Length: 434
Image 1 (cartoon, rainbow, N blue to C red):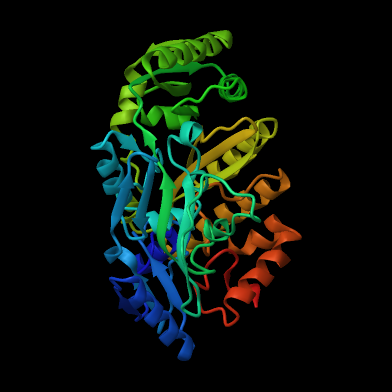
Image 2 (tube, rainbow, N blue to C red):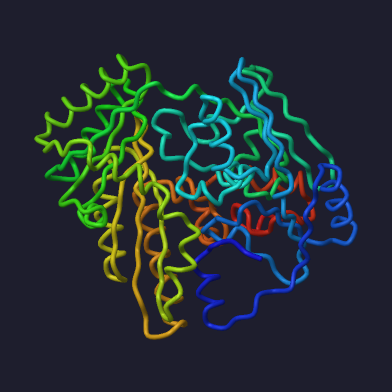
């Protein structure tokens, strides 16, 4: 019982025995409360599990731990008038999107792991979807949460379009990886599906040219449905050459056409070659092909390693960050990168690295060196060490450096809500919060 952290998969591939844990599948909030209270009495650690699609080791229980399989919490209520959905934590992301689509709506949150990810998991890792440039990240969509605290207390969701009665405390749990409480239910804003979607692709000469199109679009007030830049190695996987940009505009036909025209002007302004609708249609068809679930198959060969590392920084710092991380990863194996989730201030650089080693020990050692170098480079460039995959065990050694003075705030808050540190010991910095 574990997530898709590549280190775990490599260790199991080498013959390591998985730990013996207890798995409970509660069907009601009251059952969750009972399990938490019993775990507290017996000082037993508890890890909440959704779709187990995480890739950072947040779900890596040890012998004797209790895993809460929340998949039975799958109720959904939709309010079409207010454009609000109330859904329980175990709801599958793709199934929720399909239910909304049938009623002419969309959540607008479509990460690559959508076919296997749960709603609670996406909230707990603070994820971002492929259409974040239009609809925002998961934290922008969450209006309220129902959470079970470590002592079994349930805090009910209070969904409001906005409030000034203190900070939005439910946001404490968005990205907490289950270490502050167990997310039971989420209230989210949803959207009408756009009447028109117009997408196409371009070939560009340089990284800087592609980033300039993205920056100009976001700072110019556009709300593209999709805006993604691929480096030559990543472009080659899609049958394209050089730097490639895929973008789509959406909305009422007149608005979508106007935004598409502006995107075309921006691309032409940096000398981009128009490739027509082909790259967009191809991307749309294969957008979920690289779901985290495929890691099991891709890591089946002895000695192989494969991982993704998503960082984020400002527009001005992106070129240097990209070049240094890419060079570091290329020393270990095949390295590629794409840029996505743009805002007016910057975007995410999403790296993939794959290679092979003589044996499993060497594979794990090389994988560790890949991460160590990438994290140190990110910190040196003042980049976020995680954009939307979370922290887990993969990034735990660098959390204190990332948070700086805010680490003490996080430590005190976690200790106050869970003084015995029984909730997910792998969440946001590990159990070093004591």
